[in-house]
Image 1: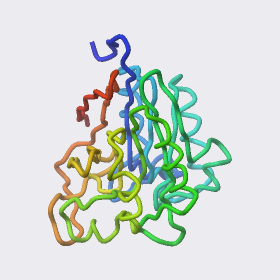
Image 2 (image 1 turned 135 degrees about the horizontal axis):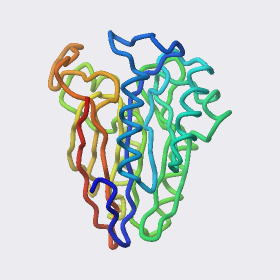
Image 3 (image 1 turned 135 degrees about the vertical axis):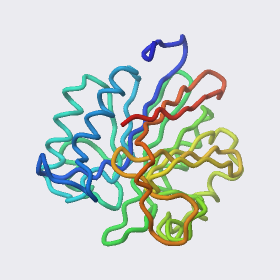
Image 4 (image 1 turned 60 degrees about the horizontal axis):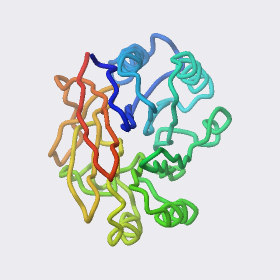
Length: 248
């Protein structure tokens, strides 16, 4: 069964890059993103996670009405949830409904959600406050999952890598000697991706909206690639597993 839980396992579902619009029938690059998001939310509900995590680019139009609609859907789902801001977001508006940072403790893990939004830019940046949050979390010996919108690693597409986290070196300077930093999850690139850097497995998840073509030098949409969510199981002693679940 999709919602079958295992003892001592914390289950997290990641959704990312919703690109919602205020109008129910409005489309983002030809796709009704409200409809695609609702499909992902229904699937997430069947998985019955301990936490639903949305990693940014939630409102393409950055309108309060769009966040209001999204907040209503999330609350109606009955799931515990957190959201983070992307470049296509307004953190100040989001914060009217729910924080755009979080640090959550589970029995065996800690989860840290960071705000990489940089006003007026497509690239992301972690300011001094966000870097301090990482330092504080690393004082705890529990295994750590870090979530943010912008990738702190290159994903192999020249145009995407130019729009990633500007100060990734600062990020990795904090993590490089920290074996409890097990997982880094992000969005922004509209594709699946994974790689290790230092002690951390880096994971990107496909969008609930549209997908971009992997390993390209110029912007390109992959119209045939399905949407997906990511299910992560956090287990005792720093063990974890992850899988993508595609849907359309």
